[in-house]
Image (cartoon, rainbow, N blue to C red; front, top):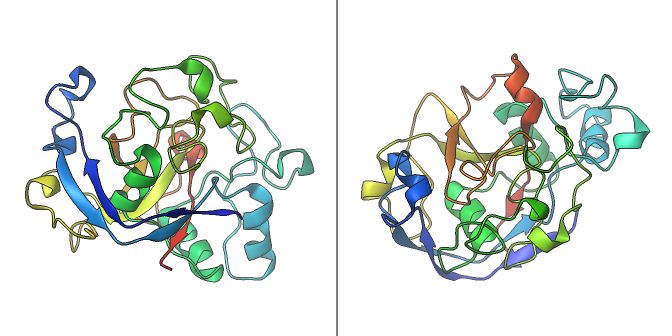
Length: 239
């Protein structure tokens, strides 16, 4: 995996009151400034081939389903080695990141890597562009190989931060957390029931692929319904 460095500094996290697409999503507000220490984050989502190495080493559980939304043969099929691993629980993702000497990114780390410092709505800017990501508007209704949309790169060069697969982050879900979130290196609520996924997926739209969008994705060990076909992840680490 190639890692991207995100330097220390402040960024705008969450959605502004002026964003009409965020009106229904109060857990994205208030928009606030957050300072993060520098960190590294995976350039792409973890692929089938990468994840399979952890399984072969006995450190990870195999993907619970070898298909994908529109393909009967996916995980374990060499044709899709460079595609994101899916049908992954939060626990699975955590185990993989630990095995490779990294960790899941916090929500704040994920969001800064996706949108940079200026509060833009998408990795590439403020305007929706279906040609810059894998979504329901222009994608194949399934995953695409990681890095297939270089024009949709974030300001730091991270790829597929919008669309393709939902990505697990470290934080517990907390609907009012932003109202009292620490201004430096926030790590989310201290406890909870559900973890969060970010970034939208290949079945996503212009609303839920925004960099500020927060989705609750069941409890950490949850894998068992069709929606988890779209759950993948990337890892991060401190310097």
